[in-house]
Image 1 (spheres, rainbow, N blue to C red):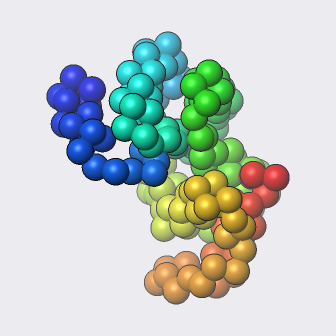
Image 2 (image 1 turned 180 degrees about the vertical axis):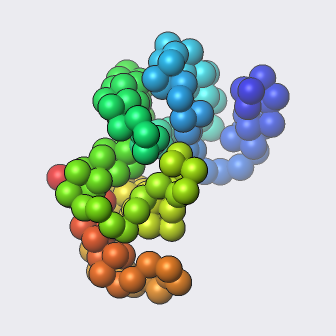
Length: 162
């Protein structure tokens, strides 16, 4: 949809970005990874032609379908490797965190979108990947996320990259 509309390509060409982040609709990497890869290839060429780098937002499985994380991860990693793109393994960090901890909850009540903690974990992974720096100790003052919870997210983000 974004490719066909053309606005995204126009913005990529007109603005100087270091990275352009691509995130696919949450179930397409599971249902049709080949189509996902076709669209990423199109955008990747535009992104590289603009002088930026492609960053792939590797997302998480829905709460009621954790078994789909492998397919999501494989879909992103395979195209990322093919294109030499930066992959931001948020879904991997989520999967690892959920295996070890019951709280804070990463999924929102809809069991698909992120809670505040899930969003913070994603942000920590992005920070670590894009700045090549540990998020450990980053100051956080978020209403609804305790200091201990923020520390857990920072640790989980860094661990996913090690």
